[in-house]
Length: 358
Image (cartoon, rainbow, N blue to C red; front, side, top):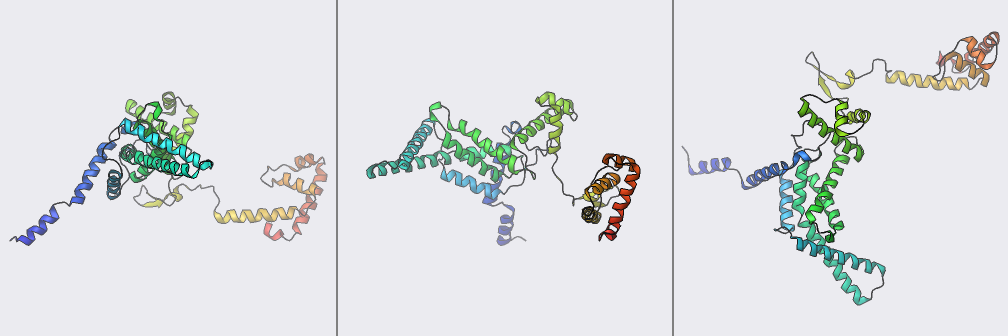
């Protein structure tokens, strides 16, 4: 039996809240915006063929940013005449700031110049806040990168501010056409610097993005993995350089990561990738201490005896020689070399580190 109270509770649970509806609408809007021109942007080279899974984002953060962008900026887009007017005010304010910095104007002129500076600052803020939605639109093109969408928007805002400072209204171009290049540059630089665990230079990241796009195109055309020679023909880069750059496409993995074995169990990656011929830590420490004691013992010999034993027994990482060859390097006969070797070894046996060397 349903009562009014039980029906109200069940309806409240089944009907989504207004905030949830706004969040869903926002995500649908972002998905539609991100589909626009998505194949034309540089993707993160760590996953050349898996660019469909963007990192998770907090819808509340993006929703708050949209609300602030609409509240701070103009509800309507700026016209070309308004952009020219704002740019002229900014230019006048910069000139007034330069005159104030020179210290030559009088007190009455200072008030006028200060008003022009404040007017230019307000025009700059108006030009920036009215184009915040442009930053969001450009940032959604790069959602397939390793950075979150709020971080992409923040980096795009830096590019928008640089565009506002460098915009020249005399060229006749719209501000949005000019600003989009600065926004994209700021976002791509941030992806190159912050998206990888081990940073690579920006020019290397650009070449990696070019290689990834070529790999994707050739993979769709050939229905197989392209070889470096085919990528070199498509990109115009040297084949050897492509082979060297392909190493950076694979993300680093932790040696403590667990992987599945053929038997169904798990093991550490460090146990599989361990070099069987490599020395353990204890052996390395022991060899280091023994090498230090040997150097101290050789210092008690004469230079001729040190040189002879080093060549004779291949000390200090050098190749060992026969008795005759080691003596010939010093210009002595084989018999003299035997006497020199016996005397040097006798000194080492009586040295204080003889027990350690044994």
